[in-house]
Image (cartoon, rainbow, N blue to C red):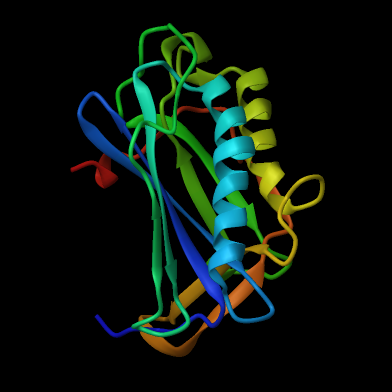
Amino acid sequence: MVFVPAENVLQVELRGSRGGKAVENVLYFARGDTIEDAEVTALFDWLEDVYIVQAVANQGNSFTWTEIYGTDLTTSISPTYSRSGAPIDTGESASPPLPNSDTLCVSFRSDNRGRSSRGRNYFPGMVESQVTGDNVELAVINAIVEDYELLLGGGTFPSGWDWVIISRFFEGVARLAALIQEIIDVLSTDIIVDTQRKRLR
């Protein structure tokens, strides 16, 4: 596949495991200048110490975060970064896990329209006590959305980074350079349990 550069953007893969199955969510963070090792370290520290710590409160104890993996998308030969080893953190709920395909879809929005201006993640590691029938409990949705709202910046979020959406293709054609748009809002569009069955391997 053709490489589409995204200048000064770090692709961050948050990797985990549940029941022997690999789980991964992808986020993108942009800088206004060249990405340096120390800046990646600061971002990884924050993801490990703040975002993941808050996320595990909404995840089952059969789910474990195992690696933070970053790729500088500026060129096809820009550096990669990894933090792994011992499990980074483990979910806290003892409730039985939902099937890996059952989850909550969290939508990321920029201030523009169209599919190229939106992103999403499927929140991993959910448990039976968070769902009634086909619906995710509203308090759970609010808590998960609050996890992602931490990425919008402010507080202890590392300076110089912006959480972004990138679009590499338009109408099936590769862009010369990725369209990079800052995320300004996070939401769940409904309370119904979502499925990521097509994403399972």
